[in-house]
Every structure is written in structure tokens, then in C-alpha cells.
Image (tube, rainbow, N blue to C red; front, side, top):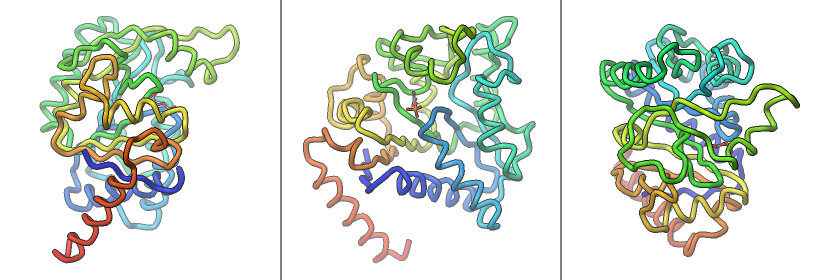
Length: 263
Ligand code: PGA
């Protein structure tokens, strides 16, 4: 696992965005795996700026989001479809019909999950998957105890996740406790995975992910099995790692090697 430790959230956003810009410029019809939550927002702003500056075009890009609340239609302001339109899709030259978010209003959510898997496969698989991480180590809505080989399915949210996300809902407003989420097995099939985490609240989850035992207690630890993962974090999120200097040293050496090879 490659761990990149940066000074602050703004640098994390820039670094993450550059990976996506590079990917799309290398393969204009890239299939992106996208994420919601507060962490990716700054990275999406970087991508919007890059698109406006003409440094990247999303015209041929397609996308699959990790998850959606079950019970919310896509035009509900708290739905993740709405979030993606609002934070990214409405501001770049992506074709909306090529953007996919699990259908929170599906009549048959179980069938919708199977169909989502088929669609990812038909698109040729995900080239780069963006992830945030929950304080409890969840990725997508794969809460602790999720099977490390799980596929897209209906998942019940933990009390902690519901509380963490309550800030987005009005008092008394219906807040879903169920979701549709890509599984951990689905995520592990992405060709590349980029995980962003910032702030001290994520430090325990980051430590478990990078250094902890492989365990369903921390779903993100399953990423230890993936061959191309980059974990991009700020100093606060890195604060519980055993040896941050070692990760910084590796990154410096990687840069030196890339320069030497002209990459
Ligand atoms: P956050 O959520 O970016 O809002 O902290 C991350 C997650 O729960 O996956």
C-alpha cells in the first residue's frame, strides 16, 4: 500500500485530483469509481477547475458511485445522486447518461444490486476507484463485519454511521438506515484504488487500514490485498501511524525514481 502524507486537506485534494487527471488523459474513456461524503468535495473542486482550464475532459468518461441511501430518489437533496450532480457532474463536461449511482428508489433493490454489478462488468470494470473512509473503517457503506468478498448489496448502516451523517438531514426528516453499496469484493476488482482521509477523527481507521490486521472489523483493511492502492492523508489522519517517516521516505524515493525514469 502506498501511503502519501501531506500537510493538509487542500494538498490531499490536489494530489488526489492529479491522479484522476492523469488517468483520464491517458485513457479518455476511463471508468471512474466515485465516492460521496465531505472528504472528496475538495478534490471534485480541483477536478472542476482542471476541466475549466482545459487540462482534462470528462466527455468520454463513465462513472459508478459506491453507494446510495435506500429509500431516497435521485432528486432528493440528501441522495448521493443529487450530491454527485451538485458537487461534480453539473460542473464538468461529463455526459450524465454515462454516470451511474445505485438506484435508491429501486422497486426491487436486490435485483438492482445484481444489475449494478453487471453494468460495471459491461463497462469493462473500474479503472480508478475513489474512496473515503468512515471513522469505523467502512468503505462505501461496507460496515464492520462486512464480508471481505462481498458484492453490491443492501446493507444496514451502523448507529455510528447514521449519527455521523445525521448532520446532513433536517431535524425530523426521514433519514435512511439502509443503503445499496458496492461490496468489498467489487471495490477490490478496481484496477487502482485511491483512498482519501483527512483529520484526526480518521487517524484510528487509517492506522487499522495501513498497519492493522486484515479484519472485517476494519473493512478498509481488505485493501491490503489490492496491488495498487494509494492512501492519501494529511498529518492529522497520519498521526497514529507507527512510522510515518518511513512512508514519507518511500514517497521521496519513489519521486526520485520516477524522475530518473522520466515518468
Ligand atoms: P466523510 O465520510 O468523507 O464525510 O468523512 C467518509 C465515509 O464515510 O466514507
